[in-house]
Length: 83
Image 1 (tube, rainbow, N blue to C red):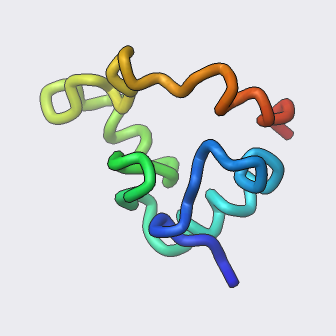
Image 2 (image 1 turned 30 degrees about the horizontal axis):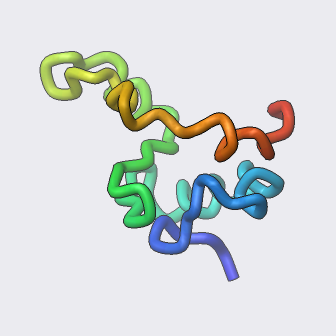
């Protein structure tokens, strides 16, 4: 069963291992999807990412998290190097 934004858990070991496939599944549904587990929007499509990063009037944080909401070192420790 393909991953969806509703079941996406960014801090889980499964996500760390299979992140590219999971994000591809989410992107296939929509380049922008609300992720309930983190109460944030995931922007996965190239065009949508460029739009968010290139329009500070509409997206004042440039798609970044608020500093107090950055993931903990423990939650990202399981992420291997990018492919």
